[in-house]
Image (cartoon, rainbow, N blue to C red):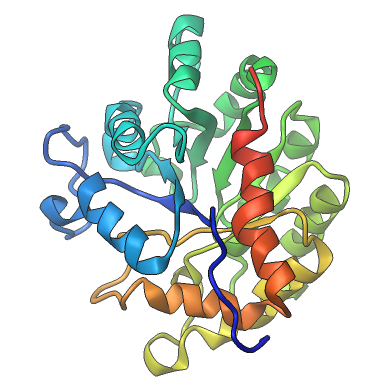
Length: 280
């Protein structure tokens, strides 16, 4: 880690969720208090972290109702925030264009537990074809095994792919898992991005160990694809009981990079290309 790293102006937190009691959930919010997970609450966290931009991702609790995400974008400022929605093939073209105007720039498929998912694998390709003209991407929260099983599908997609949460490589196998090679190929071909987020999902070492068992994976993605990685806090950390202060994950990112230029790419220029430069 380089010494004296600073969070640069225009830094972007590329992955967070909002749970707002004004919007009805399909499922409860994983033991989190919805009152504390609003856009206003996140804005306080954002200021404390030194971040100026954000990407709000619709959690599966809301099924395909993206109103909570669109509302959060508006509260945070449409020029400073973007969003990733959840839709099914029955979504109208008019709705997609409206979502674009409201700041949405991608659609997410959270299929690591498909029995609880609002979407399915057979929806990925037809929806990808429909969003291509809008400059959007597909964001995938899949297990490493699912990535391998669906590599042919991923290679057919006409849009870029964003892999959630370090690729969900199990720590028992890490970079030796065949999903790592699949992701590497797509990154190398300029067809994919990696989110450096939620290290706790596959780590067995929280607390004082600070998820050090995923360090090698994170540093690998930064090394092989420095212009294809972004960072996200995954606030409000609904997958973790008694989550640490979100600043821990900023410090974690700083421990993965070699210098200020690398940190600037991950927090500023890479997010700009992925979320702000795409055009409908």
